[in-house]
Image (cartoon, rainbow, N blue to C red; front, side, top):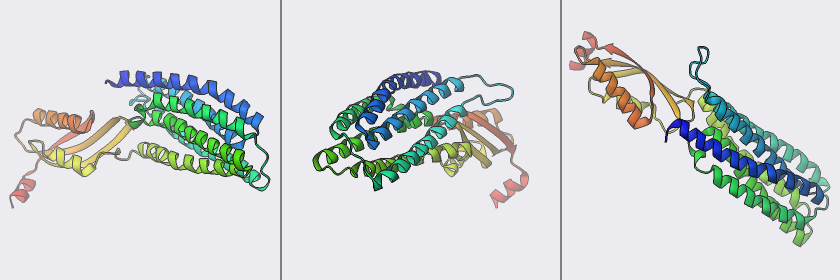
Length: 294
């Protein structure tokens, strides 16, 4: 699937998931106030973050399709990474709000309409499962879509937590379960979002993309016929699935330089899906030949 077609498919998935989430957010928010449930209100707040995350992701997909300019020669692909990073940090902000609300309820837990809370939470779980199913698949290779997907999955966990809290309070009358489940949901959100933030920072810091080993790529290039040595090798990601490489390749004098260059580029594209390459060829010196012969 081409990059343009893939982005179009991912945008369509986001639109459907966004529509579902917007409708349910209002229902859950109203129910949360009516039942006086922190777990349900925190879940509604998380649902609102889902809406914001998916809206931002859609905007990033559209913005990233803009053509390159003289000032932005790589185009605007990094907008997807910035959106994913923002979504990850937004999850941390939500966790802070949940922890703050839970702290006050630990000392004076209010009464909660447990049965109504459970009904709404069960409906929310099905909504989140539907949204996650729509987004599933594309999140594996695209950080922008992964940010939106993590919001939905974390919200599904929140719905499960609200169901558990509601059941405990309904059967035992122990209302301390509500803030305790809220804190547990917050911890799960922190754990799930950490890898997203870490991977976004890795792309922005131009680290070697996940799944690619620098020394393995070096050996692969040096195995191309006519290449003696590779140095100054750099690999980084412009966005989730667009990789760039630059290197100096020492080649034997008298060889077909065009054939060597084509061999390197074809090998990198086939083995590592690296299409954007800058290879500087250097002719092997006499001293290097004598050293190798020695």
